[in-house]
Image (cartoon, rainbow, N blue to C red; front, side):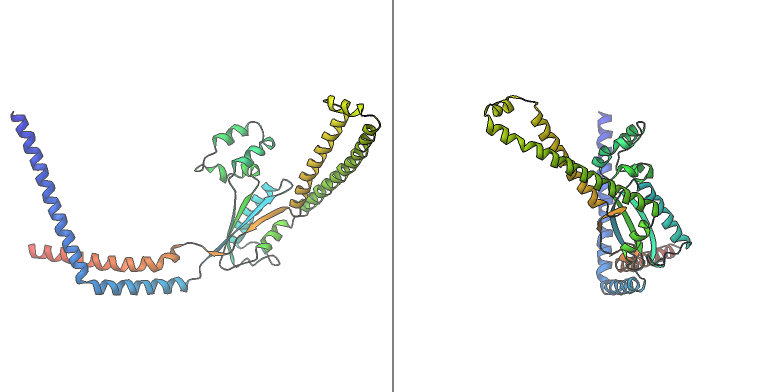
Length: 314
């Protein structure tokens, strides 16, 4: 029984303490609201002044602009592209290189590249990787991992995004022309283009030959209708093989035509975004400065009130 009484007393003391704290909190809230109402005109003036000051400062500093270029490297040039972008970014920061004739280096502040994350392209290109890398690719597939930042795995992706940051708009084509200015890769691209054209012509010749053979079939059927029954009953006859060969050649030519369309440049461009203002602290000055002024005003009066209390106690 005494133990139960002690527990009842403890619970009662707890609720009484909570009630006291709640009362102090309500009093503090009442006084704070009263303080805001009493100084409402000053607070509104500080907000308007801060917003005007923040807007003026945001216009005073030229905002950085950013744009994105979506490219697909050809002729196994992905590693070159990543190395060139890294060298370009380093040259910009150290003012080492001259890009006259391509773009304005003074306007360009930063350039970087990253793969467009797509696990389907990784799976499609697995045969291009050593066997020991494949398990690491699967284990590292995590949105928060550094897997996508490793140039080692960059060739596994078809599309890559070049992010450009500048003080003003510049010609994206100038950057692409600079990247394309590689004689070895251009010769490699032209050789690949010529090879595909040759294969297409050879396939077309083979298709014409197969068509000439297939034209004999109707005349053979017309001479003897038993030939038609023979064609229908033979599951793997020569005519079926010819038709299958022609179908495969047509499908192959369709793929080669698509490859030709992408080989008009070493780095096939699939999209260039518009230049937009880069989000930075400057963009929020119109909201940050009014908040700072209001907080300074509130903390000033709070400090003044604490000082007066301490002074009265002494």
